Image (cartoon, rainbow, N blue to C red; front, side, top):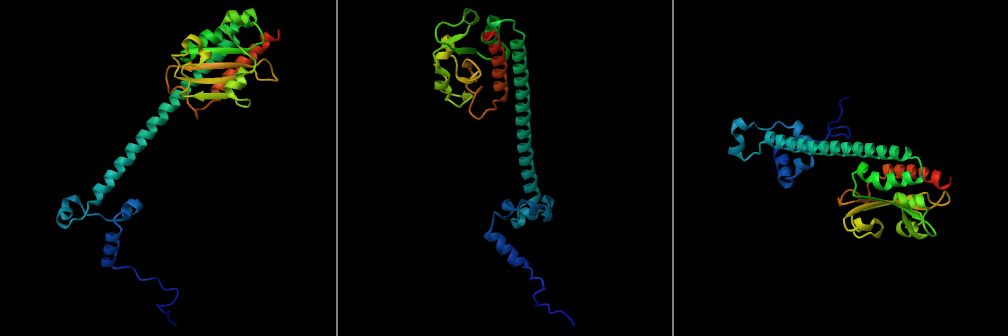
Length: 240
């Protein structure tokens, strides 16, 4: 018994050439929306002359232009990725050097001096401030090292009670904690150090004249690591 070509298993008839052309005229963006179809089409060659005579687009040229744009886009993306990777590696190296410098300190004054004077050069910043919440005058060693006394509750007021770090690309101008450098700073990072109940509440303030050095959404792992390193060093001397 022969199968019925019009039965349910028969393949639907394919459109003829005129129907295909009519569909493409009604959908001029078909190849833009379906670029994978370019690979299965046989385009007219530019040497045949058909492109100019019959108004047929040179699909080979179209495909090449598309590939050029894709390559240019990939090159730009690759360049941006490499630049970001290099920047991250440089930042990681800088933070590690700063952490080692803090760990090599020998007393409270030395630790505070390294943080408030050497960190800026090691991290490529314009100002680094170590603020300590203290009821009354700071310990003489901390003051001699360059620490800034903060009224009790200042850290929570600046960061919020549950926030560990705040990055600002703007709004840092004139921040009082940076003292004489306040008008120079265009972006900053404020990091909580030794929050209660682990010890005296402190704040590390990193300031830069580069408005894009710190910004919301930026990775914070390295800065938090450095703040934790400083907190361990400070806790050791303050409790000794």
